[in-house]
Length: 165
Length: 202
Image 1: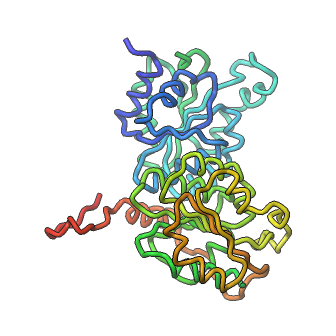
Image 2: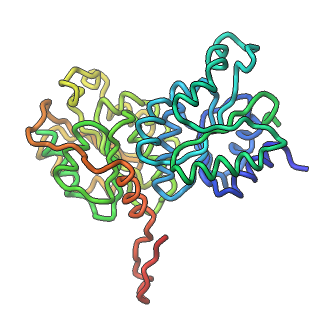
């Protein structure tokens, strides 16, 4: 049986995702371990989350379907790229965003974003689903359909323990 | 040298098959006013990200020449991307920076590129070729060969402050800019081996 992270990447590839970039988070370290180790993914480790979104936009303009991985702290860095690039230009992307600060139990720097993240995504008009292994296949399918119909970014929110192995 | 003049000279030196990503602000507006084409992606917002967009594009379209038209304010806003470009080292990435050491679109407020030379930063980051054109003559000398130099490459072009009257805005809707660019960027260029009469596209 392959790891949850391997299964997740396989699922994304089955849905046509073929460009991966982002900034690491310990909550998806299983995924970035694979991306870093296997050159076939062409993973680009970005210096900032907004730069990752720029890379994703360029890859889309070149014919790819991008995934951008980030910690939720990076959502703050990403706001202008999301609203003044992807959303107005109809550039779709799947954002895989970790949920540090979930339930108020985390290091102090994560508590506020952890608390406001869901309303923040709604405020930015980014449709999202919470990573749940029992519904993951349907959720990725639904998010991808929404992303392709709207040509706008969507997000999959990943809590602790889901993609660390 | 005036910025609009320099933008036009660089654009005119490019092969029509090149893909151009141009930063927000006056540089994009000057390029659009001079000569628009579907192979030119005008980034009207997201300041600082033209180089990231160009890098993503260059990585997935390695057979195409990608040229980023940038400004000093844009480069400084996401300076770390110079490191990303150097690390990924795409051999088809050409970065032209029009440098007036000012934010030309907001009233020519000073940037810091007069004290932090961006050509030196790019060289230190690991761009394979770096050049600087300080006047019209130097630009004319640099242009034909710059796009044949080893890439990633940066050409910094020193330009005057001030905006030329009569420069329009990019008035096409952004989704249309995306659609036409995507079509152009993913069209397989006809090569000598494709002589049996069919055009490849997707």
